[in-house]
Image (tube, rainbow, N blue to C red):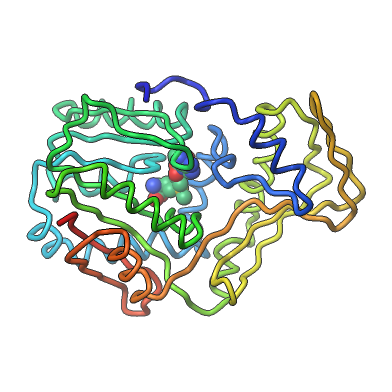
Length: 313
Ligand SMILES: C[S@@+](CC[C@H](N)C(=O)[O-])C[C@H]1O[C@@H](n2cnc3c(N)ncnc32)[C@H](O)[C@@H]1O
């Protein structure tokens, strides 16, 4: 893994072409995050309908004393999918990290976030790395293995299907010594109208975030999606307990790239995101299956969002 380089890690063309060739076309949610996509996500976090960010913040504010006692201070704080780094930054006063390590696939955006952070916290050791959690990754040797705390806020874990989430959490467990810790945000099952509104806001910011993926894919794959051909769709699947986001063709569309082409019928969709919603007990069990111990769970009064702390041993 390299310190931040202003590029997308690896060569995603094969993965993108394979996803578009599927009978039910799909593009992984990691492709939302070019520089503009990351900025749009930061805007989503400010929307009235997008309850996860402010609810997670409120839960963390309420549990801060207990968290401080459980977690201690002076750890290496490893922020998974750091984005604008604001969530980790809010924990600096409480956790007083020895070192802050930010990981994100959106390397350009992370570089800008870290430049700000370094200015505002000149005494803190800061490292940033561009990486893709959906391929194999390991922290470089310069990041001490002892006393790691992994921070995975925002319910990003929901982008993985539950069995993938378990494997990801097992991988984190293996990425530290027995003194490793995890602090993770988990979005909980609630009424479908609230869930869908959070992914289909009135202002259309989430629609822009979803459709911007096509511009990013045009650049990565060299293809020719036209924004006007596609509309944003968000729905809740109660059987799978997940929000799904799709892009739906408004008319017959042919998309071409070097070495391939895909035809879409009007109404045909590209699946761009799953966001699994958990019951508290189910996620506690998932953590246990992944090898995490001593799980402590805090939620808000409506039980909309959970923050969980766990130990590697
Ligand atoms: C939902 S946002 C959360 C951002 C921030 N942590 C928060 O909670 O507000 C997901 C973040 O993870 C990053 N990300 C998404 N998929 C990734 C992947 N496969 N590997 C590494 N980072 C990824 C995105 O660039 C984005 O910054």
